[in-house]
Length: 186
Length: 149
Image (cartoon, rainbow over all chains, first blue to last red; front, side, top):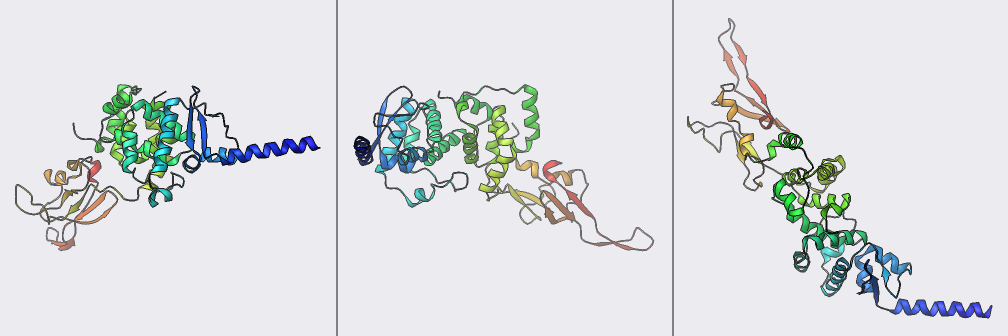
């Protein structure tokens, strides 16, 4: 009985120590470690918040097998920048489900943050934000991608996003005719 | 890795909602079949509709207060493109000139009296028809849908 009690106490002490740490360590699919403020991680990611609350955070690096090191570095970078920026009232109120909450325009620093990313890094970051349940980062990255689509012809969209045209000529002509009223005459 | 096609459908949906204009949707849907399926899905259409209560206005029809018929100088009903509308809708397709060009409708006296959706109702003032043995009041009306003529 006494031994068991001791074990329990040790477990308790370890948990307290874990709870006292103000950062969490995340491990990318390729084994790189990143530290991020626990407060920011819990506030910005529903998945990390759940893991922190549920005690499933590993001190030696919580495995995020779906996220590569470049994307994880950007996630952590975003969390740190976010922690340093003064959160606007608009941002706080937008942390409801993105499908129902009105979209809030990216702030200046968020715009700069996604503007410097390569296309590949941007797409990976969208997937990482989606996986981690980071609604604000998802909004900001999706906004950037939608801006890249606006005002472009189907051909230009395919070129920018490296998409294979899987329509036959006839199918494309059908769509064009169906929607002719919305196209320019050219 | 680093491929837009690796992004799940529900996230692409969010991206497309942010496009915020049907014209952009059409171009995106024409890029590939997968995107067409997402944008053409009734779920997307209703989601987009519920988030964008502000409708796109291409312009409005006026009863000759704004435009004069170029050749004859008299005023006739016409389509006036809205200045704030993005140049995605071809105003020429909404023009009423086709009504006058084949003399179906008298542009001199016809006025738009009502509209419903994309249908327009034009009529001429009531007049006495003396061509019949007993003169009768007559009123000519035309219903047309300019965008699909």
